Image (cartoon, rainbow over the protein chains, first blue to last red):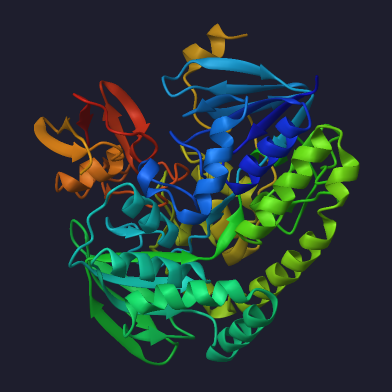
Length: 414
Length: 81
């Protein structure tokens, strides 16, 4: 029996588990969250699971799979992953085939004041909302880029928040183009968009606009938006701000899988440059939930040795990839966003390193040596993506443990 | 109606619905800062998904726990700083 280990219990991971188990593999699923679903299908309890997630979550429930929720993979060795359970203890899980489906994270671009409490990611705000955060009556500015902003504005408004602005950095023309493209390639998404819009309309909506600064005391009180010429100063209680998604690739980089443009390279069976490691979902490039599910199915089938069945999924894959390319082009980040941080803006939030301390350094390695930028608990997960955009730096060194572990645990499990 | 449980945040007791994350319990308690940064700034939850480590709190005497990743349990003691 092939031992397949799947890391990540989002759409791609669940699809991979299902297909691998169906192909008689012995499957283990590992996810850092207390429950399956990943970010997009995150839910506070069974009843609150999103409608489209239910069939998958039910399917997962019935599968004969070993589950480790609340567990974080901290290292990948040739045929074993090292994982840290919620209580902190370390365990090894052996694999013949490993499927990495860790998903995506938001791109955070620093601006003056962005470290104030109640300034959070757009997806971050959504995650907290689903965890039970009360937003009724809060004045919320949603800013950044990408279709996630509309979904977030819709959900927050539905929960009783007052959306005082939606600020999208891309131009009106590109946004309209995206709408037309979506209508052609993926009409279901338009309906989804309308459902969200029903809640946040008629909130002010700005295109070609980004955050100039935020001010506050113990929390954010005011945000200023700009289009490079005019300023809009708004009183607010919460800022939900994200500039699109980037692949969460640390584990694949650690395992030595080839990378290209910030994502892990895979062949048509989702196999990486490392023979027994597969990747599925946003880690191979940002493409959304439908693409993730198909990639997960292919990876699960291929990892279990069922390549003929896997190849039947190829036509569906191409359609979704086309949509993904359209999406990424429509929300490409404009160069002016590089001017958002000023000298005193903190870039590395773990070590409190400012843009002024970093911008004249040669690369990420010098930044680490001179300032400790990227060496705190998050291990550069937030700042390295920002610095890639701001200064073109590439972070290509990832060392175990990829998430903080206690030295006592590392020593006691050889 | 969802079942409720009691947790303490900085020594004060709060009732939260089952399934509430620790991060949300901290916000419900009215705290704006989860931790203090190395230069003394107040910080709170940023990513909401366990990667930024800004929502680190002490849970049942274990420091540096990511509040967004943990669900409230009956009697849990949560400390911000």
